[in-house]
Amino acid sequence: MTNSGGPAQAALLTRIATDIAPAIHDVDAFWGRDWPHDIDVTAAGSQLQFGALAGGGPSAQWADIAAIAVADRVDPPHRIALGQRIVFAPGAAGMNERALRIVLTHELFHYAARADTALDAPRWLTEGVADYVARSPAPLPRIAPPTALPSDADLNEPGPLRSQAYDRAWLFALFVAATRGAPTLRALYLAACGVRHTDLVTAIGDVLGTDEAGLLAAWRRWLTR
Image 1 (cartoon, one colour):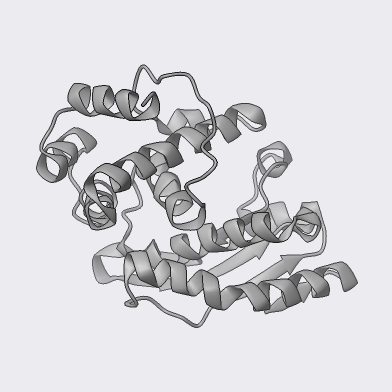
Image 2 (cartoon, helix red, strand yellow):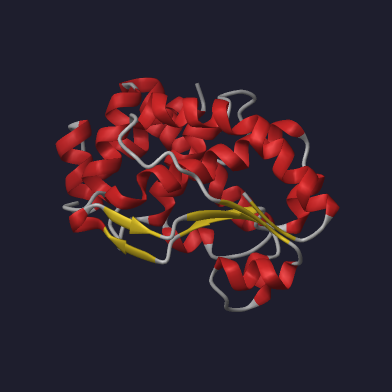
C-alpha cells in the first residue's frame, strides 16, 4: 500500500487493510479465484493528485469519485493487465465503514475482472455488476420505473444524476441475480463484456433467453413487486 499524502491517508490505508480480506472473499465468491491477488492500493494526498492518477482530464469528472481501479496496460485477448492499482481520493478518509467497504469491494471487482473485460465493454453493466458484488441488497432505493435499459451515457454526468445511474445499473444486476442466479449474472457479464463479447441484445438472448423488450418488462415488474 502506498501513502501519497499524510496522516489521514495513513489512517485510511489502515482501515483498507482491515477490510481487504472480506472484500476479496466477496469478489472470489462471485468471480472465482483466477485473478491476481497481489493488490496495489494507493491513497492520493490531494484531489489534484487523485485526478492525475485516475487518468487526468477535467477535474470536475473526479469530484464525486471516491476511488478508481486503473492499469498501465491491458491486453484482454491474452488476459494481461499490467500495473493494476486501486487509487483512493482524499475524501475517502471521511467515509463510514460500510461505505468504504462498498467502494473497496466495487473497485476490487474491477481489479479482478480487468483482464477478462473487453476495452469496449458496456460500462454501465461493468459498474452494475461491480456494485452487485459490493452492495447489500437492502434497502433498495426507490427509482422511477425505467423506460429503457441503462446506458453508458447515464454515467457521464457528475453529481446526483450519476449516482442515480449507478443505482439503476446496480438494480438491473441485482434483478438478474435475484431472478436467474448469480452464475447467470456472471455469464451475462462475460457474454456482454468479455473479450469475445457479442452485442448486448445478442447476449441477452443467448444468456437470458429473452429480448430487450421482454427483459425490460420483467425488470419493471420486479422493481414494482
